[in-house]
Image (cartoon, rainbow, N blue to C red; front, side, top):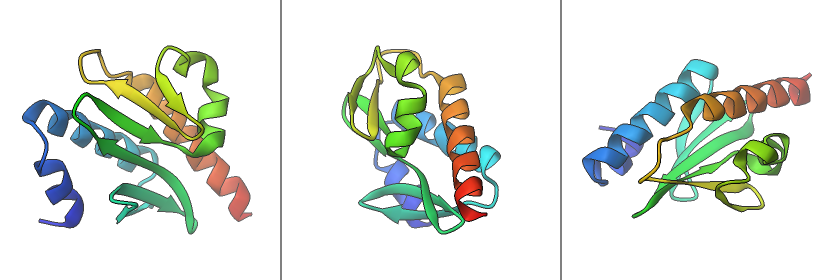
Length: 116
C-alpha cells in the first residue's frame, strides 16, 4: 500500500469512496500525472508543475486546483465554501464529479500550455 492508499484508508468508508473517485477522475484526465503526497495530502503534478490536490476532512472534501482553476469555475463553485485556491465539498451533499472533471481538465491544459 502506498502513502496515498494509506491516507485514503484512514477515513470513513463514504469519504474513502469519494476520494477514490476523485483519484480516478484525476488519473483519467491526466494519465501522465505524477501522484505523490504533498502538504500532507494527495497531490498531482504534470510537466513538473502542480496540477491539483485533494484532502479529506470530517465534514468535507477539499479540492485545491490553484487559484486559476478556481477562478475559471468561480460561478459554479460559488455555492461552496472557498479559499483563494481551495473549495470545500460537503460530505452530506452530492459530489459535483462533472464539475471536478472539468476543473482537472482545465488545469491539465493550463500546465500543457505553460510547458510549451
